[in-house]
Amino acid sequence: MIFADKLIELRKKSGMSQEELAEKLGVSRQSVSKWEGAQSTPDLNRILEISKIFDVSTDYLLKDEIEAGKEISEKSISDETEPPLRRVSMEEANNFLNANGKRAVLTAIGVALCILCVTPMILLEEFLGSGIDAVGIVIMFMMIAGAVGLFIFSGSLISPYKYLENEAIDTEYGVSGMAKEKKEKHRPSHIRDIVIGVMLFILCVIPIIVIETVTDSDSAEVIGIASMFVMVAAGVYLIVRSSIINGGYLKLLEEDDYSREKKLNKSISGSVAMAVYWPIVTAVFIGYSFLTNNWDKSWIIWPVAGLLAVPVVMIEKMLKKK
Image 1 (tube, one colour):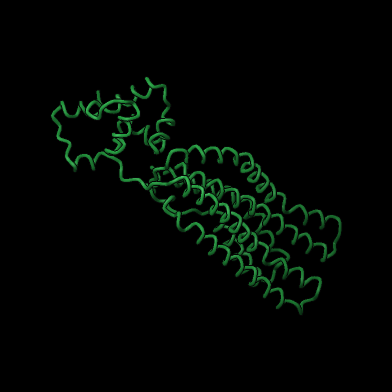
Image 2 (cartoon, rainbow, N blue to C red):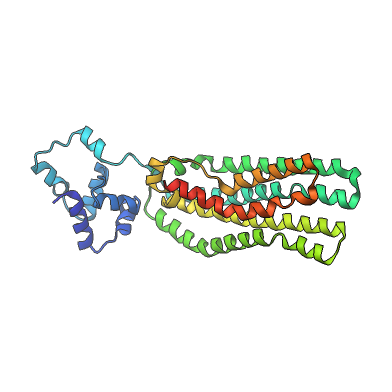
């Protein structure tokens, strides 16, 4: 009987699930599944821990290989076992989740500022006259600078934990359970924020349509355009903030885009992400509007970008699965 079969037998006799065994060993459930599927072998430290958990000798766990006359050299062990895992303590996991929560809010605010940056210029020009254009442009660049500052600062908060995106991790007992509990608690609000955000993208043109139907006033139309920007910014804020928070749990659990398999074999790194997508849309909007001076028509870029945001994320995930 090979090690994989012995592990399955011992675990089932003790009435223990893969997840429970994984927590006792401080590894992911996927690791236990690979061991039982004979896809990999735990390192010697894990063998010792398994022998203690099930009260069996290491000779019993490794006896078949020895009887078959196979020499277990240092080279063969290193070839067949998993690479060393980076240990993540409960304290480090909690510190990461706190930093990730702050990053989520700051990044979402930064993206919202990028979207709203043209609103002051449009409102000032309409209600205070064309002579105030320079003030509006100054405010716009100040908002963009503020957004960039938030992106840089939020990135610095999470930089010590960058390894969670690229390296296989070994969590201490209780970390996976804590992350799963918080992820499940966040799940209803995550779904709600995504749904509301997408609805705001779709509905953002309604203020303009309603105002144009009710009145021909240019001032009212400008207010409608400003309302559209606010709705898009609010939708993006909700999606970006909630997605980053949810991503933090996925990193600790090594799930979805942060699974161990994808970390080791990923061909596409990074993310299109709303934090990148919307600043690009903003740059396109500002550049086109300045070159053509068609501020009354260029607003259509935003609802179109809002509708395209969801397909962009779906396409990205499909590419990552290849």
